Image (cartoon, rainbow, N blue to C red):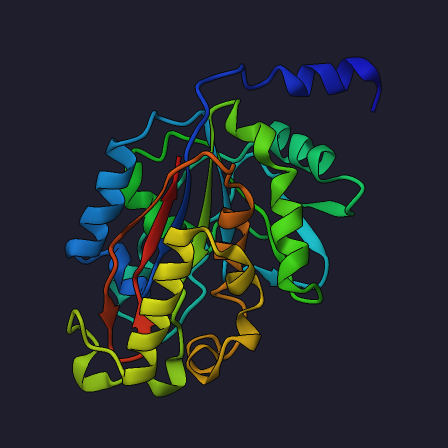
Length: 275
């Protein structure tokens, strides 16, 4: 790639007002087709920010060895789940991709090795929430995968290199769940807002306090914080998208919470806005 090509990519998205960053607790795939307070929260979050030129999503459901970014013109809608009604599998979210944004993302993350991907698409961690925010599917969306071989500090530091995208109208979304333990779900209360085991209540309270106080060191070192977080984060896949969001926060920026509820005993829908 020559200098002119790089300049063209850099100019693909003009400078804009600095975009906020979001972490969305996406919960069950059924949120894609249900009407509840959480999808209303996703819509409200979109209404309160400028319409983005494009979206970069870090989803819990693209968990890879190495780091990849989707670079196809038209990403497919991936139904990466089972046991749900046909209506959910029928959902399509035909947002375009952006090979230009993918290439710029690769350049920004250097010297970390990031490879362009032409096979993945949009998994439900991305489309199940973005479809409520931008139902016309008229905003380009790309995904950045999570390298499962790297520790949280690596992901926090890698995210900082994406900050320039915020000045080009790019909305960066992390999609996962802070409290996410599917083995310990209370199925009798799967739809009961506010239902949480004692350890889940403690995890929500402690992590909320750390988030609002800017104590991101505790969030990064979550494995050292006690049994309650070991239950809340038995595997890091749904937690690491939050770490990307936190890595993008400047010191002077505000952080606020929304959709801040426990459901089903062992899941939290807590979502975060920065900026």
